[in-house]
Structures are given as structure tokens and as C-alpha cells.
Length: 316
Ligand code: BDR
Ligand code: CA
Image: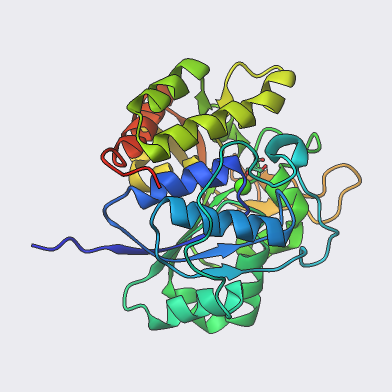
């Protein structure tokens, strides 16, 4: 019997943890990855798109790569070279792109995939939510074709770029707000969970020891990603974006709560904060599955297993 596959769009700004999220996504047998779409965030759009093409080549993902929005809907772009380097994905050498960039924009590509799919489509969005926000604004008729938007972004307890706001949401709060009020099922991996998704050097040495070409690259991505994190005092790498993948595939290892969540657009100190109604004070119905915790050891086990699926691959 053939397995019923789940159509998936990967939207992100790779970025080391986006790249590792895609390594995990590409290893999931029930995922049918239909397209990769890119968004400005960790680096400029041109750089993250080139990175996306090279990651697709590394993973033998023969799917269209479509370029998204070069700037947030209303804010100026913020980039994160301190974490991801000048290329947005500094560290190991990667294969050159195996195919060109799609002539369709990310929003056109997402709309096409949604329109043509018989099954509802899962969107995994691990950068600023600009493309997804623009899609929801311009194609409201396609909302029903979305199974869930699984995001890395926000945080109920704290931010990381301001005391209140996490990077992806701070870059484009309006796009996040559009998702909040869209009525589309949302799953949010904020810093509450992703700062518990710590991968220690001894964990990624196990990945390196697998010895396959993808695992070696993943270990070297960790080496680079950890440089700035260790300067900030972290003892391991906070592996944000893979949470948005693994919380879909293995929800049983995560602590997931239904909350009403709304993104702050104004605020003297709080623009980009994802405000969660934890106690149900507003009376608003939950609009979000907020992922707030995880079993770290099982998370690392699944990460290593994902990297093991590339055993036997030839070095390019
Ligand atoms: C988020 O910001 C980016 O730098 C990472 O890729 C992740 O998506 C964490 O705040
Ligand atoms: Ca990201």
C-alpha cells in the first residue's frame, strides 16, 4: 500500500537552523515537499535564495525554489549576520545549485501549489512571516487549502532581539498579525520551546560521526552557528527552526497549548511581541497551538535519526 503523503511548502531565510530544519523535513517519508520559498531575514533575499538553492542541491531536493519578498510588509529589513555570517550560511562548502530560481514569485508559487493540490497543504515558515502574510492578503480564497502554518517565531515569556520580541516576528510584525487573525490553523514554536531545544557539542559530534555527506555539513553548520551563541553564554546551540518541523511529525514529545495569540504592532517597547492569553482573560477563542516545551533528549534523538537517513549517499 502506498503511503498518503502530506504536501508541504518550506518557507524560510536560511540561515543555519532553517537549513537544518530542511534537512529534517527532507528526511520525513510522509512529507511531499512541493516547493521551497525564500524570504529576506537572516540575510538579504539574494543571499538566502542562493543558500536555499544550494541546500536543495545538497539534499537532492528537485523542487522549485521561488524568491519571496525582499523587504517586510511595512518595516525596514533587519538581518542577522552575527549569527549566520556574511553569506547567511557561513561554514561548510556546499554544492552549487542544481536548478535555477523559479520565474514565479514565492507568493505565486505558494498560490499555485495550494490551488493545484487535492490535499490541504502544510506551510512550514521558519523566517519572517512576510511571504505567508502576503499570500493570505492576496489570496484569501486559498485559506481553506492550508492544513496548518507551522512557524518558528515569537515567544510567550520573552524575546531575543528586544526584551519582548523574537527576531522573525520583530522583522515583520504585520505579517504575523495577518496570520493571527486569518482563521487558518497555526502552530507556533516560539522561544519558549526553541530555547529548550538545545543541542550540545557532544550531540552534534554524534551527527558528525555518522560520516555521511549531509551529516558532515550539518555538524559544520553547528560549529559555525555555535560561535556567536557561545559568546552569548549558551552551552549549546538553540536549534529554533527544526522545532517547526518536528512538532508536526512527533507532537508527542512537545508540550502544546491552545492559546489566543496576537502580535503587538505598536508598543513603545513591545512591537513584535506575541501576546498570549494564557489564562483566557480576553474570552477570545484560541487561534494558535503554541508549542511551549519539549523532551530535549528525544528531540536530539530524532535529529540524529534524520541525519542518519542520508547514510550511503555519495559525496558530491
Ligand atoms: C530565529 O531567528 C533566526 O536567526 C533563526 O533562523 C530563527 O528562525 C530565532 O529567533
Ligand atoms: Ca529562520
